[in-house]
Length: 249
Figure 1 (cartoon, one colour):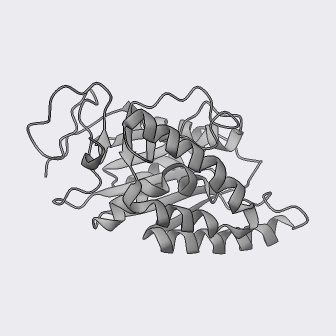
Figure 2: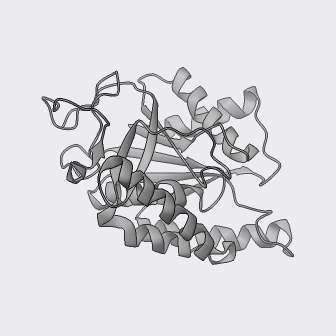
């Protein structure tokens, strides 16, 4: 079952058209499918969030020729003790660039500051403008029930943009450090990442300033647990919060 890529629990029938994603979320895109090249945007609060939560999925998309852009809300300015905000930002920007190179993605930094992020009508509108310029088919964002404000804001920005955008993109939420940060996360679909696990690991270890061994150890437990749920070795889980237009290959 896991070899199909996307896995839905209790799916009793197969889709009649490859790559179709029904409005109910019953059928989900296989990142390994050939056909129309998709535009994917992954939104994260800090460098290392997208890599930790869905690095394996990102690598599956890029490995199949789809375009992936990673939006980092901040540059992780407060993520290195003893460094000034500017010093930490420079280090973490370089690390994010290397992680994106490994995953085959493009990095975009949205200009907010780690630990001092905000949300307002202006911020919503600015984010929607930036996201719309990418013309995404699929957006992944952090689940907004989270202990970290920066993570919560990324989820709210993505959902607000979905509400305001036509045509609709497909929106999925991912988890990071579940239990410590992401809370009450119950995946509705999974991606088998066995074929891209090495790239995911390398992208996490590109964030050398963040203690990547500890980040990897926790997320390795998570992806193995999600693999048990999905009946495969390792998987990343997602909540399909809102679905829009159908994509046909």
